[in-house]
Length: 330
Image 1: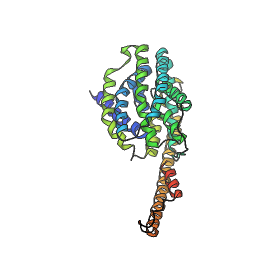
Image 2: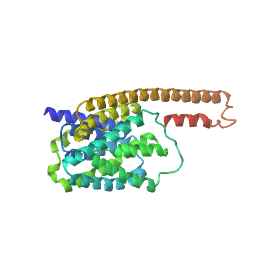
Image 3: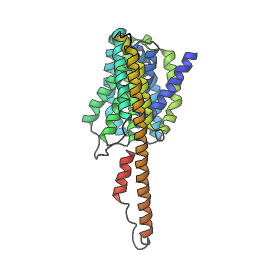
Image 4: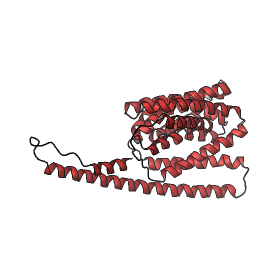
C-alpha cells in the first residue's frame, strides 16, 4: 500500500510537470520505475497504459481552457500513433538486458536536452503561416517511436519543435501536444499488448499512476499559465539525467572512481544549468516589464492627445510596442 501511494504521488507530480511543460510525464514515471528495477518494456507499457487516462483528462482540461489547436492535433497524432506502435513492437522484441541501456540512454539524452533547452531564454519567432503536414507528420512519427522505446519522449521531441517553428502560442503548443498524446499512448499500449500480452502490464502500478495523474490534470492545465517553465524544466532535466546515469554506469560495468566523478561532473552541470535558467527567467521578466511599461505609456499618451470620439476615431495602438510585447511573451 505504501508503494502504491508513492506511485500515486509520482503520477500526480509527473502530470503537474507534464501539464506545465508539455512534456516529461513519461520521462519522470519511467525513470522512477527503471530505478525501482522494473523491466524496461513493462515500465514503458505500464506508463503508456496509465497515460491513456491522464492524457484524456489533460486534453479535456486544455480544451476547456482554450489551449488546443485541433488542426495541429489531427495532423500530428495519427503519425505519432504509427510511430509509437512501431516503437512498442520493437521494445517488446528485445531482451531486458539489451533494452535497459537503450531506454536509459534515450531518457538520459532527453533529460540532457531539457537541461540545455531550459537553461537558455525561451523565445519563439512568431512567423506567419500555418504548420503543414509535411512538417507535422515526420515529427509525429519520430516522436512517437522515441516515446514508446524510451518510456517517454513525445513531449520533449514534439513540444520544442513546435515552439521553435514560431507559428503557435506556447500555451497552444503545450495543450495540443498533450491532447494528441492520447492517441499516441493508446497505440503504444496496443503494441505492448500484442508484444508482451496482458502480463506485460503492471496493473497496480498503472492504477496508482493513473489516479495521481487524473487528480493533477485539471490543475496542470491551469498551472501552464503561471508556473515558470524555465526553472521547472531545468530541475526535471537534472533529475532525469542523474537517475539514468546509474543504469548506464552499470551497463558499462564502470566501477572504481568513475561513478563518483561522473556524478560530480553531472551535478556541477545541473547547478550551472539552474543558475543560467534563473538568470534567463529574470531577464525575460525584466524585458516583459519594460514592454508592458512602454505599452502603458503609449496608451496613456494616446488617450490624452486623442480628440473627442464624436470628431474622430481613436488612433490605433502603435505596432512597435505590440511587437516587443509579443516577442517577450514568446
